[in-house]
Amino acid sequence: MKNFLFRIALISVLMTSVNAKSFVLKIVKNVGPLIIVELPIAESQTLFLLDTGSNATFIDPNSLKKFNGMLKRDKSLDKDVNTFSGKKKSEGYRLSFSLDTFAFDDLETYAMKTDKFKKKEDGIKCCDGILGMNFLKKYFLEVNVKEKKVTLLDSLKVDKSFKKLKIEIKGKDTIVVSCKIEDQKILMRLDSGNEVPIVFQREGVRTLRIRESLHQAGYSGRGLPFFKLDELSCGKHSFKKVSATYFNTQIGALSHSAVTANMGSHILGDHYILDIKNRLIYFKDRSKMISPSIKGLKHYAFKLQTDLNRSHPSVLDQTLFLILNSCAQGASNGECLNFLCLLQEQKCAYKKDVPLMAGFIDLYYKKKTPECRERQLLTELQSRPTEYNYCWYKLHELNKKKERTLTKLALPQRLRKIEQIKDLEVYQVTSLKGFLKDFYCFYVAHSVINPKALPPAYFPLSLKGGSYTKKEVDQFEKWSKTDTFKACSEVVYYDIGESASKDLMKKDLIFVNPLTIMADGVKDFKGNLDRVLNHEALHILYARNESIRSKAKKMWDSLSKKKKEAFKKEHSSYDFSNLGTVYREYFSYYY
Image (cartoon, rainbow, N blue to C red; front, side, top):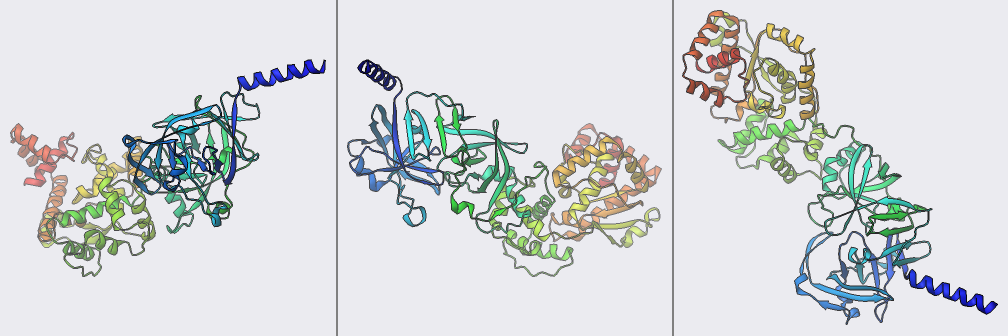
């Protein structure tokens, strides 16, 4: 009877081994969540890092000889491989081996330095290579750090104690996980070679405004900052107090534009299963696999900004630089910088050939930051002019000060001789931000500008001067209580980060914008300023005098259709849907 039972048990074991096969790789060392296994395929010990962030297999050039007979040179695979520090030329190979019944044929393999772990810092000198996704995806793979083993499985039955996380495979075997930080959806690349739980990449740093939040938390810009995400949600799962940093680079393995960040295997804990075929990962999350070196670092308080679509007044610093750059087309850089100093009641002595951006930074940003230098400001301005970006934001914040929107000037003698405008007050613009907030929606309300043709950030570049009457201010006050004003103010808010103003001086006045006039050059600045004053004085005459309005209408009506269209085309930023605007502007330009 005992012999019979023994034979039944033996048959059962044999049937199980036929139906479900496995092979165990020994975990020699884990550095936090980084798993190093012994791969028993060579005569001497070979150690490999498991890395879901690598889409191929890599072998250190000094270890190639260990794999004689298994490696075949394949020159067709030779290419520039994307490494952490950028692209590097690498020789291609095909690697074939078997682990019991688990065969791996012609794995795409590259010779690359992988001996990165040091005995003193990491407790192990390693590795001979990296096993990437072409190895990890072929079979089910179970990682159990506590039991120091990685198991290859040809079939899978998962215990109910495991949690399930859906994944996507994008590009060349990139594991992507859809997650959220608060209400912001982000795409994470699962990279088990990541020593830090979350590493935000350039696009994520920009769109989530991570540097801005850290600046507000006290980060100076020096060194690599670490911070805690209060909660990271991925699928149905929530992970609390997750350590993160960022790597703001345009080159290398951390420069993917398709994902927001790289996510290490930390959140999966010390026991998880990769089921790449079915786009699933199973995990127990029994312990967070954080390296002691990461735990001991200072972590900044991090709070995701509530309105990531909102811009910032620093876009007007960009506008001012564009004005300066326009000036420099007809004068030397030093002349334009010195003239800007003069307008702002400062004394400067810039040399003619001073680099324009260097001079601008010296003049406007007395307080500096190591992460935002001349090159970064130019690059950002060239790629996305008058759009929000971090470096312009930070330098503005470090150097911001209170500014008056307008300062009073004396009405020129020649205009005081005109009886109907001798009481007119004249002002000059001294703050582009205040100018935009006060006047953009006012001019939209009076159909002077077309907001579709002239967005707020470009408004200070366009208007060299303006005028209004007390009656027009009263009309604007009524309009400012409507939903149309709210919509206009919202446009201003999203363009410069602050809402439009409703408070204008209740009097007839004209103003000039010397900063915009300077864009035409410094040599004929006085002549250009006088022409603007004359133009705006004619506006007031038009508003105050019925016979002038009648004259303006006759002047316009006498034009041919071709000349009318040419005038409108030349002044396309105006809203000419109102004929009163047409008459007034034509009269003021040509009377």
